[in-house]
Structures are given as C-alpha cells and as structure tokens.
Length: 308
Ligand code: GRG
Image (cartoon, rainbow, N blue to C red; front, top):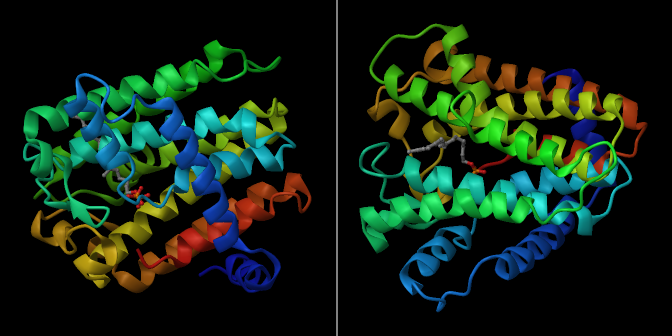
C-alpha cells in the first residue's frame, strides 16, 4: 500500500463507522430499488422475478455507496442521489448477468447464488439483463434535474459509461484478449473501461445530483478513476487468493480462462503495491473537499483492503 493510503487507512479505522454507513446506505438503496422495479408478480412475472433475483442476490452495493458518498461530500442529499445510485446498480447487475452467460464467462455462481441463466434459462437471463439496462434509464429519468446538470447530462453520463466506448469496449477487449499475451497498456485499457468507467460514473453522478462545481466534478472523476483501477486489480488478486465460498463467485477463473491480469503480468506483491498507489492518488484527488469526504476516503480504503 502507498504511504498516503496506509496513513489514511490507520486514521479511518478509528474515525469513520464504515460498516454502519454501508449497512444504512445499502438498506436505503434496496428499499428504493424495490419501489422502482415492477413487483415480482407483475405480468410477465418470470422476467420481473429474474430481474429481482440478481438485483437482490446480495451484491456489495459499492457503486451506489460511491454515488451517495460523493453527493454528501458535495453537500447534496440522499433523496436526490438515490435514483442515480439505483440506476448504476441496475447497469452493474445487468453487466454481471450477461458476463456470466455461457457465451461469455460461463459461470455458475454469482453473489453466492446460482447465476441468473442457471435458474431462469439463457433466454430469460439475456432479457433480464436487457430489462435492467433499460430500467436504469427509466429510473435516471426520474431524478431531479439540477441547474448545472439537467437531465440530458445525467442520461449522457450513464449512456457513455455503459456504451460501446466504455463498459462494453472493456468487455470486448477482455474477450478478445483471452489466451493472448497482452501488454500492460492493453490491460489498463481493459480495466479503465470494464471496471473504472462505471465506478467513476457513480461518483460523478453523485456529485451531479448535488449540483457540484466543475472543480468538485473534476476531483470526483480523479477519485473514481483511480479507485476503479485499484478495484479491478484487487478483484484479480482475490480471484487468485480466495475461495469460491469466500467470493460468492467461482474463484481461479482468470487463470483457467488464461486472462491477462496484473498478478499474471507483474506478480501478487507488485499488484498490491500498484493498487495501493492508485488508492493514494484517489485520496489526493479528495483534497479539495477539505475533510468533508470522510465516507469516500473510508470507501477507498475498504475497497483496497476488501476480502470478497
Ligand atoms: C452487453 C452482452 C453484453 C455484455 C456486457 C460489460 C459486460 C457484459 C460485463 C462487464 C462486467 C464485469 C465482470 C466487470 C468487471 C467489474 C467487476 C470486478 C465486477 C464485480 O463487482 P463487485 O465486486 O460485485 O462490486 P457485487 O456482486 O458485489 O456487486
């Protein structure tokens, strides 16, 4: 871990009740998602059951937490940020359902349960992913437009992060890179798009919901980008070092699929060091908030030190 991240980590262990914060924010997000989504018995019931199955399967809700914490750092309210926190979680869950399909990573477990296609079949899982992606935009359209960020900007932000230049571009490069030797630069291209884009978008949307200044938005962008890159490196480390039970998804898949990862290219220790440096940079980006971004700081440390 970098020195900045280590010092901040020690300070935060005493200063901020992150478990309590995450519990509280995840409960608010779950209640809001439950309100936004059609009920499980609404016709056609199978699709609504499938959407809810993955959405409420026990995800960590890290993207919504980043969105809400960013809004708070900018003086915004939970109520204004909640629709956007829910929208990013719908996009994230859609991407996981599709990523697990036989045509992609072909996985049986996600969030400690059978994957969507294992329970509902491939056709329904594809539709559940499609429906969650669409649902995200329906929810985002219900947020309050802000003077600096009208609805158009919010929709653009989400569409760009989820589109063929970001999230999908990362997945394309990831699929095409399997079994090939790729460079560190190519690996970063994948991580920036597959993972960092949506995490960064989550933080930015939180700021936008609070009508943040352009300097605050720039700071949240730097924070989200660096936390996002660190997040994927840690994910690759956990894939190697944890069990399937601990992760709630199949461990060791990257090696079996011959995926390029930081641990595969530079080893475990160097990967940990790089993740620590990125977290240090994320911290540095928060300076502008002058101590009012305690939740964001605690989240960055948590994401670096997480074990699942
Ligand atoms: C459009 C067909 C089609 C597919 C899209 C874009 C995409 C498929 C997949 C990318 C999804 C992916 C695996 C991204 C990597 C990011 C990552 C490490 C996700 C896991 O996030 P966590 O740990 O998961 O936050 P939980 O379950 O806790 O929410």
